[in-house]
Every structure is written in structure tokens, then in C-alpha cells.
Length: 438
Length: 155
Image 1 (cartoon, rainbow over the protein chains, first blue to last red):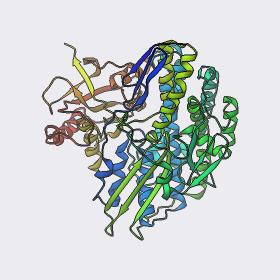
Image 2 (cartoon, each protein chain N blue to C red; image 1 turned 180 degrees about the vertical axis):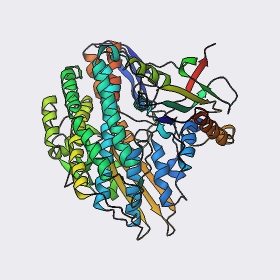
Image 3 (tube, chains in turn brown, yellow; image 1 turned 120 degrees about the vertical axis):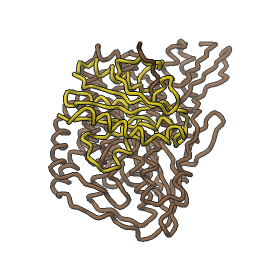
Image 4 (cartoon, each protein chain N blue to C red; image 1 turned 30 degrees about the vertical axis):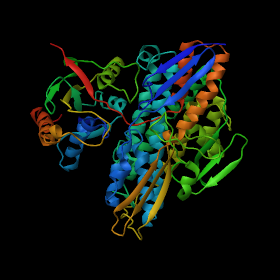
């Protein structure tokens, strides 16, 4: 067994935001094994206090430049719950279609750009252009499709503009929906090729099992994404149900010294959110084509290897493609009706949950009689996963030490584990740092 | 098609300047003859606008160029080299110069790309903008509009 190990990954790459991995082992004794999150809080919840309900979603969508559709949807849904607004079936379908576009887009990015380099032994996507050019080109085709699909419904995919409390500010036309539907149908071969690519690389995914609790939105009508109740499942199949309005009773946030981000727990010491959790909780409601993909990828519920979150994302790419084709068809058959925004009937407190790519996202607001925000609370999925990542670390390290894994392989195993969760720790800076060539 | 693309992070203080310029132009409701894109942190999506269907692309971003805070410059990607040391690509640590390299490596016929770089005073985790940049926001907007106006009518 390995006696001494020091791993200090400061600012792990290919994740969204800043996170550190620190492992110290001396004379065979584990002194430190930590997933550290040093991000500063950004106080969005304070920022929306005193703002009119019509402005809140625009502010909270800025929480994340990657999952801004999800934050917008969670925000308008919580506001609608607080104001007694019931949206139309057309609005629900369009929002669900928008949600699929975001998850599809983000999963393609994560699977192809952030994880595939690990599976192919490359440091980043750049070397893959010369060795796997068609795979990179396919990833970019799928990303562009999702980007334009989301833009059609949301006005734009980053910080969408059309989604408002009570409905939509503007709507796509039937002919625009038909054109996008045809483009999505034409992309199914690329979707199928994605499954084949990951199936071919499945043997590179580390074998590791740590059963935990899995939490996701569930619905009696569909694979939970846009709306429903909260459901959790344990590895033995035991399920528990929670209403969204009671979300605090199943998230139980708490603070730990090693992290500025809050942790969460429910029935066990930690729980997992994200694609694998959704797969485990809602497998029965996957589209048949997605179930076929799961078979091909060897993914069976209840899957307890956290590295398989990426594989579950591939299954969800298939699910979103086929479910969205059905939604496009339904909307085209219904025709798009101009609808006024549904107005508030009361002012109070309301909560919502939406499945963003990285897991279940909660928003909650209260409003006064003038529609001004009195309080807000947002619980993002990455924070819900931090405790679970830490628990995975604590199980994984002794296994790696017992297997006499060298430090480099050990570091990669920890990095791949964190990346499998697709964490979005915070939106970070993207500024240019240049010098002019003279 | 011509594009003005704002990139950055609203929660990154002066790193938000590109988004604010794009947002200000998009919100004025006037057809300026180009599409305004708020790309946020999704730098990889920039690739979607870099093909033969694009006539010209102006990217507005905060840029450390060694100038005084608030100063700005137009430059092409071939005129600069990045000082960012990146271990791998993610949307987090993305560098739009690397995205341009990626697009070029795919063998695409790239449109003319110009960057309107704005020197930040401070980049930190906070929603807001320094006084040095906030006081000149309108100037940046006019500079961006002038860039397209001086290019003549769109094809």
C-alpha cells in the first residue's frame, strides 16, 4: 500500500468555477482528503429584494452564464407560485422545450469538450481536432443546433429574454417551429453517433461504487425536468416524496470549514443531484430510444458509480432529442396562439424546482401586495453535490492507496470524479489578457 | 450577417463590460444592421458565428492590455498574443483567442473578427462596474456602433 501521497490541485480545470483537491497521506495515514470550494458568495438573493416581480427573473438569470435558462425558468415559476399565476398549456410546452434545449446543449459540452479528453488521454479538446476531427465537428454541430433551438424559444440561450412571469413576451411562429423540428430530426444520426462514441470509450470510465441517495424532480406525466415534485431514491430502491414547497426539509443546507459554499443532506449524510440521479429516480419515464441507449451503454438503474453521471448525460441527450421532437409536433399541431401574460391573483410566498443540467435547482420568493420582492432563496445543484463529492473522495482514496496507485493516476482519478459531476461552482471571469505584437 | 458579440460575466465586476455594451445596444430597439449576441460565459458558442455565413464579427470584452482603466482599443486577433496560461479548455477558463484558434483549426473560412477590448479597473466576484468603466459605457456603445457604420452597408 502506498505510504505517502501529496495531491494539491489548485483550480481544477475543465469545470465551471474554482475548486481545489487536496490529499495528504503520511506513513499510510490519511491526514487530509478534501474537495475545497473557495468561491465568494455573490448575494443575488439580497439583490432582488425590493425589486418588482417582473424584474426578478432577469436578475437571477445572471446567477449563471451557463444555466441561465434554468435559473430563468425556476425564477418565473417560483414567482408564479407566489402570485397565484397558472400558465397556459402552450406556455408549459414551450418552456419544457426550452429546458430540453439547455440540458441538451450543456450535456453535449460536458460530454464532448470537458470529459472526452480524459477518456481519450488528451489534456484538452484542442489535440482532438487533429486526432478525432469528426467527433469535434459533430460536437459543434450538436451545440449549434441546441444554441439555435434555445434561441428560437428563449430569444437567446444565454440570459433568455422572452420568458416572463405569466407566459412569453414573444413567441416563435409555427413555420419557425417546423424548421427547427426538421433540423432536430436531421441531427438524430449525430445523437446516435454520440451514444456509439461513448459506448466505445466506456471501458475507460473508472470502476467505483458508492451508493448514496439520489434526488430529482419527478412527474406523474413525464421524465421530470420542468415541473413536478421532489423524489429521492436509495440504492435499495426505497423512495421518498417531498412537495416543492417543502424543499428545505429535504435539502437541509449546512456549512463546513473547508468550503465557502453550503453543503446539503437529506436521508443520508449526502445526496447526489444531476443526470445520474434523474436516471435513477425516473428511469421508467425515459423515452424508449433513451432506454435503448442506456442498454447500449450498459447503464442500469440504480447505478451507484458517480463517474457514470457522464453516461447518464448521454442517455438524456437521446431523451431530450426524441421528447423534443414530440413536443415540436404537438405545438405545430396545436398552432401557436398569441396569449396575454397571465396576471397575479394574489401576493405571497412561492417555491419552484427545475432540473438544470447539473441537477435540481430550487428558487423561492415572497412578495408584498405591490409585487415587490421581500425575500429570496436559491439552492443550486452544484452546492447540493459538494457533500457527496467529499464522501466519494473519502471512499475513493483508501481504494486507490490499497491498489498502490501512483500519484499521477490518483490525481487524474480525483479530477475525473469531480468533472463527472459537471460542477458549476460559479460563473467565472473570461477577460482577455493580451500583449500587442509589435 | 454581421454580429456584435458581448462576452464576460455579470458577476465578475468589470468582466461584465462586454455584456453591458451588448445589452445596451440590444435594448435600444433600433435595427442597426447587425445582430447583437449576449454570449455570457459560453465562449465555445462563439464558433457558431464564425463561418462563411458571417460577414463581420465584433467581439466586445474586457481586456487587460496595459492601458489605463476604461481605455479601449480595436484590434484583430492576429495583432495580439494571449498571456493566459491555461491547462485545458473549459467554458470557465476559456480564452476567446483559443476559441478562434479552434475555429481556424477546423478548417473553416473565418469572417473578419475584430475585438473591442476595454481595459478593466478591477475584476472581482461582484455584480457591478467600476466608476471608470460605468462613466464611459455610452462611449463604448458609440464606438461599437461607429465600427459597423464605418464598414459601410452590409452585404
